[in-house]
Length: 566
Image 1 (cartoon, rainbow, N blue to C red):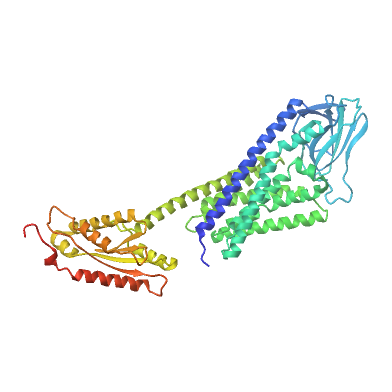
Image 2: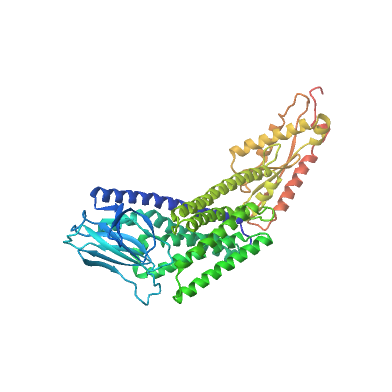
């Protein structure tokens, strides 16, 4: 099967552009919704973000801290939160995002919220949770006491997050709108990459091309997008019943994301680089397998492997960056096709990984998504550049094709154009007159007066026929070569051509040149082609040629050429 690769490319890139525009539209709508909701809730002052709270120490002293805050890990942490502004208001609540802990909240000495982890839980630390604490009515105290029991001793630092307080419904809307950009972006990227993967797979199966780069690149995008979603308060709030599944998704995505990037980068690498690349893939797969085994057996948790995950990501990123700069394009022919994307993704892996390894356990996922969007934007830019290049090549090819179908001297359709026309006549069953035309004694004129005069004769007669074609849409003309022309007149057999033939001969007699003195003549023969009959078109053309030569034989050079001095 013959595949038009340019059409396939353009269709795939057309889809990319459509998805990009869809993303842009939804993003703009999202910003509008986000601005509207935040403006509405802020005007009503129905919620606020607490910038400070207190930590209660064992010595009885309270420490005021700014939020968010990283503190050295302790088994227990007691927060004192000011609720005076919202106590006894209807539907008042507090929202937080906590990880690896049990939580008990007290007001007026009574427990008002509790999050305890069952002893048989698959994730003993409790993973992460979107905490939403409803404030009961008739509270007397101005402070709420939150006791946090940390369940993962391997974590060096605990992050006390921002605390939202206010009306429950507006607070939920505010949390959702604050994460709207990441939610929409992640979902759109997942959708786009899935469609691109399905299209690529369909094309491979249909045309047996076996190019899977786009699928692997899409896998990177899907995995990163899923990881973004697992970092959001909204995700844990909506799917609180499945917090363990979200926890599995989060760390599986983090551990697995580099593998498809390594597969893409493996194309046309040098032998030495391929060995390193394959070794890294083996290490990643081994790391994932070990993590699943120890987690499912409840020996350890994914969080305890986070340092290893980031170390592997940083190592892989550095390796991919090295391959980008060190691999020669002569040995890595597809370098520019795949590694621009991989290079940007590598940077997006490297920055948060190094940040985590050196400073804290915060993943700069906002920076990552910006870099991913830059990579996607780069792909879109390549789409437009490729389309413009194809468009220019198409215009250029069309120009050369038209030039190839025209005679350079007369600007009439040439013999190649006639061959196409002949096929069209046969396919469409068109009937008409085949008119064969030959200028008399062109060779004599060329030899005696020069080729410039001969060219003038040819151009003069071609202009005569062009005028006829302009006023008669049923005429088609061709210069067959040298002094030979062919005209096809789509008409019935009843048409009398004698008048038209005499007109052509008469008009050509008016040809004159300042350097010569003679009367130009032309020989014409014609035959009718009936498409309804079993007649060969070529035989009709031969018959028209024969009649043209019969007409030519009636003229002799001495009888046809007369100077004005005779």
